[in-house]
Image (cartoon, rainbow, N blue to C red):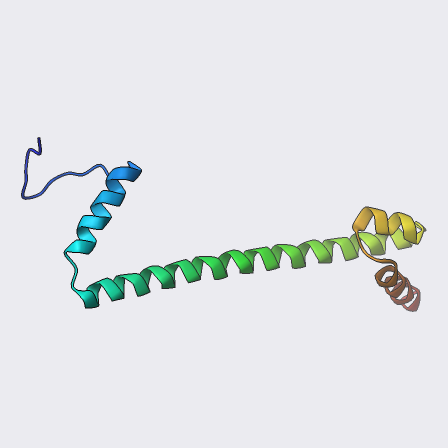
Length: 106
């Protein structure tokens, strides 16, 4: 029994209740309001996807920079290309380019 029917307290932490409340709420919307709600939801979902992708790209870029720096240090210590490639995941061509860049700086 709902103690105050004019202002019911609903536990929206339960998925089933939350879903039911959303359906009831949608039923009370005009077609324009329903469309606006869908657009708002889609916009929020798109923002989340873009944000996740940006974080993933930033992580990949940071990882690549770290691997390049690690490879430079390994070159300076005299490690062979195969070992550097195995440890950093960089291909031989990239490592050769780093070696040339390292040699130019000495």
